[in-house]
Image (tube, rainbow, N blue to C red; front, side):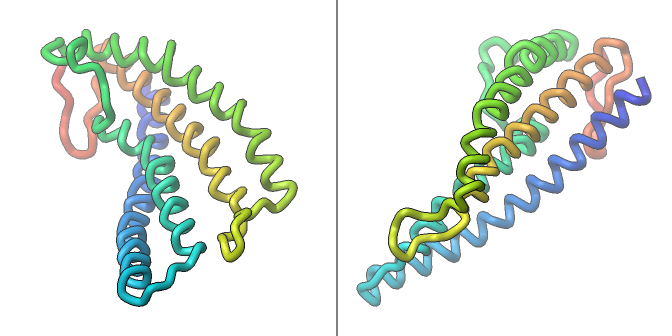
Length: 180
């Protein structure tokens, strides 16, 4: 059980660092959007690279923050099934959901997106728009990276559930979970 606890802590620490890093991109996105709006409406000109940077940043925030969102339990779930259940029942729902749906889906997306990223990287894909951003393959690489992290967080969630079901709940970031 100790190895399972170490695994959960390591995965969650990694996803927390990436998620916090991605959250700083939000400030960058605000600055870029404000600059774009100012130049477009006050100065009557626009730069394609700036517009592309907006959606590149938004995509990176969404993709790289997904695993952290799951870790913090801030993701969307069907609360009709989950709400009001005992911690043990929630652990079973999380374990089955992660093992049957989340981790296999993440593996499928990583597998399916790999050739997409590899093809983009091999040609050094950039924007097709004049004045657009280079290295579009870098943004595309965020897709499998994000789903690897999300899948790992699913493994951590399943491991947490196993620990709780075995009577060894693992506390979260300074707060203990409810005992079974």
